[in-house]
Amino acid sequence: MFKFVLATIALTCTVLGFAAATSCTNPQVQTNFYSTSDATIVSQIGFVTEFTLKCSNAGAEKLPLFAEVVGKLAPVVRLGENKYQVSWNEEIKKAGSGTYSIRLFDEESFAAVRKAQRAGEDVQSVKPLTTVSVHFSGAYKGPWINSEILATGLVGFVAYVAFTTRSKLVA
Image (cartoon, rainbow, N blue to C red; front, side, top):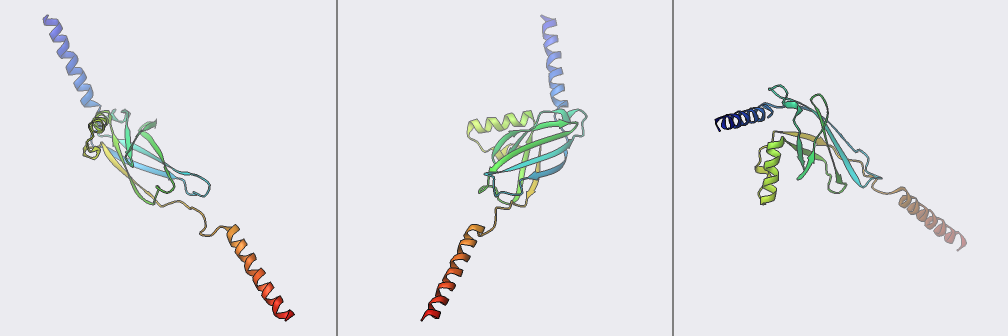
């Protein structure tokens, strides 16, 4: 019985030590942001954020991460050593220019977010691992007046001028 208790305590200490060692402390993030710049022929704007994450404790960068953007949760893809990527899309009408905040969560804080969602609590109260801000300058949505409408109006104006000039010459 004593060996069983001792083994349980040792296993618990190992698991707790591993969990403490795998949380990222003092995260430093550098980002690159890409988005759709021409929205004339698409129905949604695509956003891609690549970032590097460096933690003060070694090995913590290999943690699985999750992101919350515009109130939606998304997985974060690990691209390589300390490199991650998160992507999302928005309808053109909803994707306005401005700053988007990407809240990054590790497994523990992501579980707290999911728990808050299930309980109907405010998700913003959960402290993220870190927050990344990216600026979207907007997408080109086309000219104010389509060329077909402009050409039709121009043809109508020329026809009006031609008919009024002709009626003055005949009279």
